Length: 206
Image 1 (cartoon, one colour):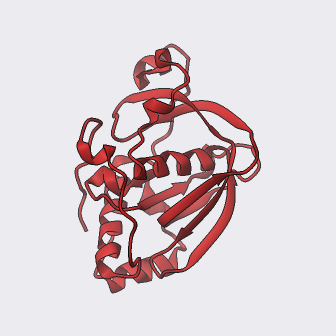
Image 2 (image 1 turned 120 degrees about the horizontal axis):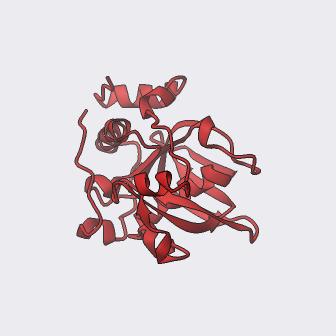
């Protein structure tokens, strides 16, 4: 499909509450997802929301690479997954603080506090509903991307404005460990149902 421009903070689309997807099974939605996958892969990140490519719909594409998962309950690896109209609710009261970054704030990181475990309900491109409980870094990624669907950017979740900094400076100062770049398309292996649905919509992921 196509690598789209990623909107940066300040663009009005990123401040909007995205519209629900009326029918997740249409080819038009599958083609948007194809562009999201291409864009995410090129960016070397693990998650992207449709508003970040200028599409104000409740769509998220993400994966949970094993090297970023923690020992927290529910923090399990997951290959590339599409979330249509996702809904999240906290499980328990536990929260934890960690570094947060965003493709719409290139080169920056800040510390945010998020729920340690969440219940995630969403639909896929075949219209099938799924429900699961995820935790740790996996849950943080989902919460971050779902925030985009409500026009919320991570600096509003920061525990202290003083934690905001550039990755290179924070890494050189020993305040954070550099993250290894990840590739979305490497996490498509075995996602047969998703790949078949994309192919039926004319989406070719090279």
